[in-house]
Image (cartoon, rainbow, N blue to C red; front, side, top):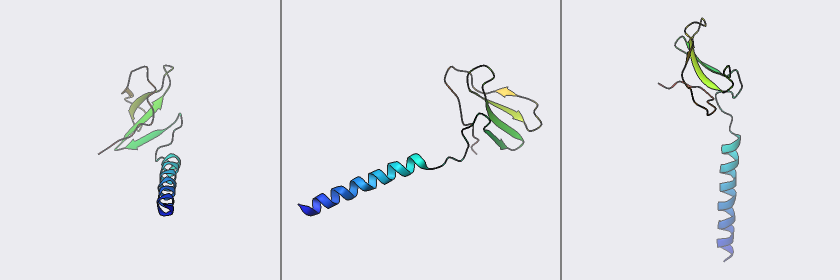
Length: 82
């Protein structure tokens, strides 16, 4: 019985550590109002110019701004994938 109790405690501790580290692991992209991602001469960024956070993309020189999302939900943390 004592071994089952120790095993149960060990499992609980492992679950707690997993949850704690998952919640505190820093993210690669910052979660600020000026978060930007630059890949292959394009910049993906979040803007609240219409009162709601939306994702935009533009050239690195600032031209060709295009809104990629348009919905009432908050769209944040733009990223590129291969």
